[in-house]
Length: 199
Image (cartoon, rainbow, N blue to C red; front, side, top):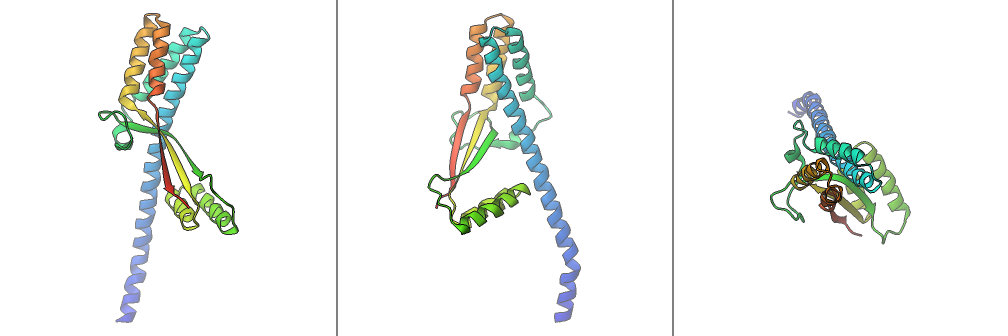
C-alpha cells in the first residue's frame, strides 16, 4: 500500500505543479490588469493637474487638450472599472466606484534596525521583485517590522462628471470656472492609510 501511495503522489506532482503555474499566471494577469487601470487613472489625474497649470500660465488650448485626454482615459469602455474598484471602506460617495490610482508601502516610523529585520527586509524586497506582495508582507510581519500602506483613491463617477463640466466650460471660454471644475476632480482624491501590522 505504501508503494502505491508513493506512485500516486508522484503521478499527481506534475498536475499540482501545472495548477500552481496556472494560478501564478492568473494572479499575474489580474495584477497587470489592475496596474493598467491604476495607470489610466493616474495619467488622467496628472493631465488634470497639468491642465490647471496650463490655465494658470495662460494656455487654454493646452488645458483643453489635456482635459480631453483625461476624459478619454477615464471613459475607456474596454476597461472593466467595476472589477477593480475598491470596496466601500472610508469612501465619501456611496454611489461611486473608487479606483486605486497610486499606492505606497512604508516601514513604520518606530522601526529600529536589527540584523533579523534587515534580513527580512532583504527577503521581502526579493519577493516584491517577483511580484509576491503577500509573501513580502508576511516576511516583514514575521520579523516584527511595522508596515503602513497608503492608497490614493479616485472616485470614478465624480471625476468623470468634473471633467465633463470642465470640457463644457473650456468650450465656453470660462477658464476660471473650468479651473474650479478641474480642482474638484483633484479634490475628490482620498488617501486610505492602513497599518498592515505594527511592531
